[in-house]
Amino acid sequence: MAERVRICDIAEELGLSTATVSNVIHGKTGKVSAETAERVTALLEEREYIPSMAGILLARNSSHILGVFVNDHPKYEGHTLDDFFIASSLNFLSAEIERSGQFMMVKKAKRAEEIVQFASMWNMDGIVVIDFCEQDYALLRSRMRIPFAVYDGLCRPPQRFLNLTIDNFDGGRQVGQHFRALGHETALCISDNDTGIDRDRMLGFRRGFAPGNAAQLIVPMRKAERRAFYRQHLETFRRAAAVFAVSDAYAVELIGFLAEQGIRVPEDISVAGFDDTPICEMLRPALTTVRQDGALRAGLAVEKLRELKEGRPVETEIMLPVSLVVRNSTAPRRG
Image 1 (cartoon, rainbow, N blue to C red):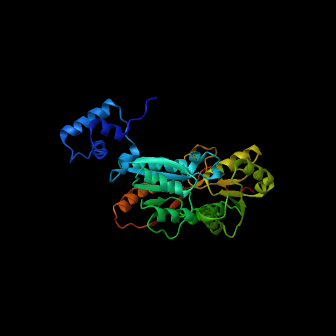
Image 2: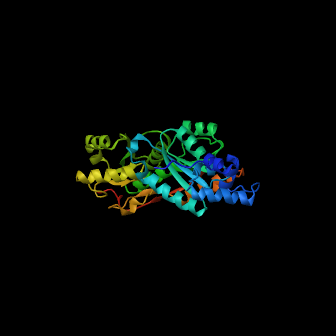
Image 3: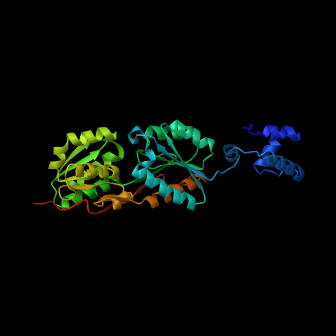
């Protein structure tokens, strides 16, 4: 395999400085004669020179790249980008970024330091971060000047970045009120933690479901352990009238488990999720869930990141409304 041709190789062969060759590569030919530029271009083509995209982008004022960084959390078990909410968010962001004439780069990251390094290497115009935590945002604030938008609302109050959150409390409240309107008096809330947005959703559910009895189940993050947990608590599910899962992914998984145990949805138990990802309509029964406007959220992220880059004043905390979508996985209490 032939060695990669370097700028210094071209410069040495032509008797020019590396700066002159670099200027021609990056289109900065204002101080380079037409004859010299032509010589450099001809030799670059002859030697099949492949430029470093990172180097080119660093030399520009704008790369037109928006990065999307997703927390590669162990709970995803190596399938981070397959998560319903993450996949849906990436689709909406891709459409909005393309519409704006920019390019999208997606990267999984386990640590915030990876975000700093990768975003700086590609001279990104802005970034969106999904599923990280307040400590990570503090590091990003202190280590880089690239504007960024937080997609999961785990930071209050935001400083020098955009927090695009949704009304998680109200979403949970709407599900609770829906269950009460159906006549249910006992319900379960399932989540893998009791912090942040999951906590807001569960607190909202309890408010909406009152004075009904809402118990909370904190499920394991790993799938095999979660299924074992469901089996251990099978009688708890049999006694419950309804279940609110804080994500569509957990709702879909639970419906599958209940079906295996001969527990029918919604005849024996009502189930609702949160996010309104595309699978909700394909599921049988179709899933009742809380809809967040993914297109609106993505559009605002792209728009506000551009304004932040331009140094314009921007409202740094935006809470978007949510709405309940009632489908076939919930039904009135029987008997």
